[in-house]
Structure formats: structure tokens, C-alpha cells
Amino acid sequence: MINFILGAGAAVVSLLTIGVISLPKLGKYFFVKNISKSDFEETNKVIKENIEISKEWVLRSEKDYNETYKQLGKGNLPFRLREYKIGNPDHSSRVNLAFPAVSTFMPAAIAVVEYENGQVVVYRKNTRLMGSCFSGVTKEIMTNEVPKGLDKILEGVI
Image (tube, rainbow, N blue to C red; front, side):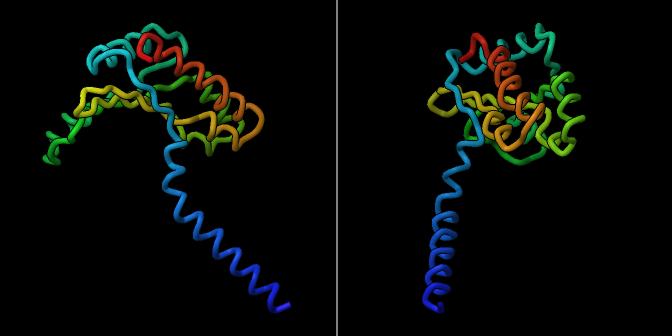
């Protein structure tokens, strides 16, 4: 019996060790990464235009991190970074009725990064992965409707 307990304890310690070592590597799965077909300015222009013509999505805020950090005396980033917070009132109202805690994941966000090598990357939350942790209307919206909507916002960019 003692050998069984010691063996089980060692297994738990091994699993925890593996988890601690690999957990930081799992973080990349929480985001969807796409390479833009265009330069930084054109990518941002197309995203803004697509949000404006959308009948479903609303621009809640736009932030130029480089300009913000410069104004706050925080120095320069080694890349250009702009973020868009966008909401979908239909999605958010249905999700909030079903599971209000999910409001902490809202609104949706799109980040556009231009790295020093000129590559422009668009990042967004992996709502398909997050949504798979839920059921019902929340799961349907997060795993299906939100990704499709964001794909439309990114048409012409990715």
C-alpha cells in the first residue's frame, strides 16, 4: 500500500513537472496568427473599412501602442502595434444572457504587428478553443459565429 501511494505521488509530481515545463508553450494556442498580404498601413486601412461596412460589428476602440507609450514616456517598442476592440451586440447579448462571466472575453480584439523585418502579422483570440470549454449558445457563438465574423473583418488582409 505504501509503495502504491509513493508511486502515485511520484506520478503526480511528474505530471506537475511536465505541466509547468510545457504550459508556457501552450500559450500560443490561445491566439490565431495570420500573415497579412499587405503592408502595415494598408492592413489597418482594410480592417477599419471592413469594420465600418459591417452590419454586425462595431468598433469600440482603436489603440496605437507606439504612440500611447511615447506619450506616456514608456519608450519605443521594437515593432509597430495597433489594436482594434470590436463588439457584436447580437453575440454579446445572447452570450451574456446565457453566461455573463464570458463578458470578460469581450469585446473581440484584433492586433496588427509590423516586425522589424517588415512582416505584418494579425493576431486575434482563439475563440474556437475558448468556446469549446462551454456549451449551448455560448459555445455556438464562440466556436462558430465569432470566428466567421472576424474572418469577414479580415477579408482582403489574410
